[in-house]
Every structure is written in structure tokens, then in C-alpha cells.
Length: 263
Ligand code: PEP
Image 1 (cartoon, protein in one colour):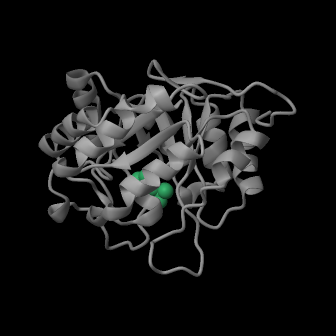
Image 2 (image 1 turned 90 degrees about the vertical axis):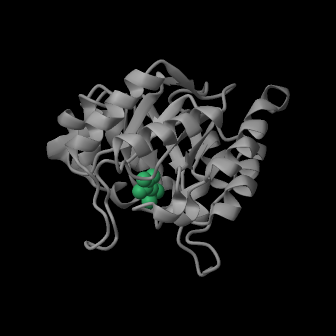
């Protein structure tokens, strides 16, 4: 269902009215984790200044360590919904278990499946039935074929509103948190009609790499970007090292603004 053999033309999908697909460069930005109403609103303002049309923010955080910040849960979703009402930005947020899919879907415009859950098949089937678009991140040890098979689980439930997100894979390299597999973008676009976006924040895990990886993503034809921003990265409860502060927003905005000539 997700292959171009089945559907030769590349698809544009809509999340909260925002188009994602060929001919667009949809920027989704926001905090890694929702921490408070003030932090989320400020991050949403930064996201908008960067050229974003969607807000990201995790209320349920699947952290590698059980001692790391786990998110505000439903209270975080209420904050995201309030910030959407105030800013007009559509909201994408992660869901981590099948039992809470309907609850998360009642707040979100788009459901995110994180790298750690890419092969949680019960969760994929549940989001496939939830009636909301899905952002499917690539597992950090998943091949492109496994990633597309995960998308197929969602599509099989009648939901073809899926966006693939390359977010870096695990390699021998330790200079970056993960290695952005830039070739995955055109490869996935050739195999699948689904839009493919890039997360330059979680892949490198380093603020100084976000702009170069953003440029690389655009150069290979990514359909969008997923970028972490935070009003005070030093105090961020989650992944502050990769969050862009206010001072770096202008550069992203300039890149995004120069795009009509590029696309
Ligand atoms: C995220 O985008 O909030 C996240 C946790 O990313 P990933 O699943 O790619 O690690």
C-alpha cells in the first residue's frame, strides 16, 4: 500500500490543514518535551519565527533511562492544545502505547511514532485505526525496508496519511549521537509514495549540526524538517544539547525563506 508500485505518484498528505509532500518544505518545530505552558508557548513563537507551520512537543517521552524526564502526560497534551489555540500551529506529538492512542488523538493533529516504537506493531495498528495522520520515525537500527514495512502496518488499517521521518541511525561513529542517513531520503522517496522528512536535531544530537544537516536534507529533496527549539536550552529537561535557542532561529528562517527558488 505504501509502495510506488501500488501508487506511482508521490503523495501530499495533510495534517491539521498543513500539506506535507512534493512541492512543499514543511517545517515542524518545537520543544523536544513539553515542560510548562510558558516554555511551550515561547517555543511555539520561536517555531513560527523559524518558518514552521506545525508545532512538535512530547508529552509522553520514551526515554532510554527510566530516571530521565518522562513528560507531563495528558497535562502536556492540554498545554499543546492551548498553544495551538493561541498560535494556530497544528500539533504533532508522540504516542507510546496502544491504550492511549485515542486519548492522544483527541488532542493532536498528527500522531508521532518514535524511533524506539517503530516496530511496536500493536501501536502501529492502533494509530492506523485512529483517524489521524501519522509521523513515523525510522528506528535507529531499522533498514529502509523495515521502516516501510512498519508504514505498511499503519496503511493496512486504512490510514495512508503517513509521513516518514529519517532521524539518524546507529553506526560505529561516536562524534554524533546517530548518523543521519541522508541517502535514505531519496531511497525511501523512490520506493514509497509517502512524504519523507528529516530530523536534523535527534540525528546529530548537537546544536551546531542542525543548520548543516538542515541544508543537507533540503539538498537531497526532503519534504520537510523536524527541528527542536527551546527558549532556554541549558535548562531543558530533555535533549537540550540539540535544541536551537532564539539566536539561531534567524538562520533557519532565512534558509526556509529562500526555498521557493530552490524547490
Ligand atoms: C522525538 O522526536 O521527540 C524523539 C524522541 O525522537 P526519536 O524517536 O527519533 O528518538
